[in-house]
Amino acid sequence: MNAFRTPEDMWELPPATRPAPSGPLPDAPHAVVIGSGFGGLASAVRLAAKGWRVTVLEKLDAPGGRAYVHHQNGHVFDAGPTIITVPFLFEELWALAGRKLSDDIELRALDPFYRIRFDDGDEFNYSGDPDKMRAEVRRISPGDSAGYERFMAEADHCYRLGFEALGDKAFDTVGDLIKASPAIFRMRGWRSLHAMVAAHLKHPKLRMAMSLQSLLIGGNPFSVTCIYSLINALERKYGVHWAVGGTGRLVQGLVSLLEGQGGVLRCNAEVQRIEVDQGVATGVTLASGERIAADIVVSNADTAWTYRNLIEAKHRRHWTDRKVENGRYSMSLFVWYFGTSCQYTDVPHHMMLLGPRYKELLKDIFSRHKLSDDFSLYLHRPTASDASMAPAGHDTFYALAPVPHLDSGTDWATRAESFRQAIAEVLDRTVLPGFEQHVTASLLTTPQDFHDRLLSFKGAAFGLEPLLLQSAWFRPHNRSEDVDGLFMVGASTHPGAGVPGVLMSAKALDSVVPSATTWRQQHARKHVSR
Image (cartoon, rainbow, N blue to C red; front, side):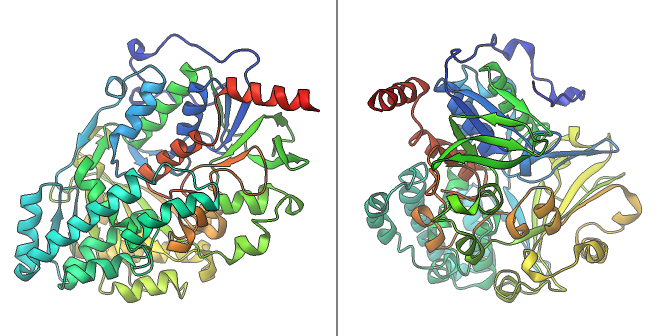
């Protein structure tokens, strides 16, 4: 039974778009999916389309995971992902369920994609319009015009080889890595993203503007592989969109697809342990003590958390406690959600406010694990595009600061309020003058919340950092290296974080999980052979 029912009209999908309920065959094999983030729900829809009986188990009181939705005083706060690109990945899921995305969800293209504000007050409007982008580059540094064209050509090259050719391929064996190696070499993937950008662009502002995109997937541009320049190309090719009603509309739409396929979502159902018998996943045990049998288990939970906390050590020869703990993990996030009783119409939907330091701040976050006094911010103002996200005449915001994960030793219970105040001072001084007197809603999420509420190892918001040797075959596999019948999807497995990445992880799952019919035939033969 689906535990998620919310009365707000914004969640209601038009009845005419709901297909008649259909379901799997009575003897269909059972897949349990842990977590209802985009990766988990996309995987559930794909498995149901292949004839599996699917149960999704969610720890929280509503679906979404990092895409959870908060409500306060009439304001709607998308907790996490807000930049929607590559709409066809959603369209595929709706088609698998016999529906059309456009019947349920309105996606609005944004222009500009986002505005970058440098510490000196100069701004760069980053968009998908080639002529507007060329003009912005010339305004800042005329001498970099040719270099910008070369950078975008190389980013397009990485997109074709990295996203189109490899994004939905499960790196299951060393052979898969060998097959992909020529593409990695052609992209010169050993270079950092910033090094690639700097080879084409000389002005420091342009280097920042073209390299900060890796932070959207938890990667330090000075260490993440340059393959992730594909983000720049991907945004230009498909645009940046907003789901009217919020990202939560996409979550609820996916839940509706799953239910229409006969799948089940259970909220307030935290998985305490993945059951393993003779090296094979056989189901899960909930925190309540209930045991749910399964033919396969798909974890959309953080992979490090899954291996370290949900599977007994005796079942893990590859992902040992030591290997999990020795990984290099992504940054975490400090997020302040707030609403105001007035509107700031000069602020666009997405805005990056860069602080006085770039490289050294990132060193503090990723290498030194030190919480600095200065910071950079991503400011989200959805009411710039969608009035339904706040009461009439009000604005809804969140201000997000990349911060170190919990290895910093920061006591967020005592530090959170002073850090919020520092963010408020910067916003008041720059783009939201006098806003604090108009605040009508306020919520905080800290790295400790990522650990305690979202069960992210070390409170890292994106799993392992997407370094070259923590990507593709070197990242936790979509098919578990340790336990048969256990699979991984989401930000911390291949291909990685970001909405396109987690949706592609569900496509990669397709290549390693057979249809329900094929699975029954394979296991019938195994039973006979015994």
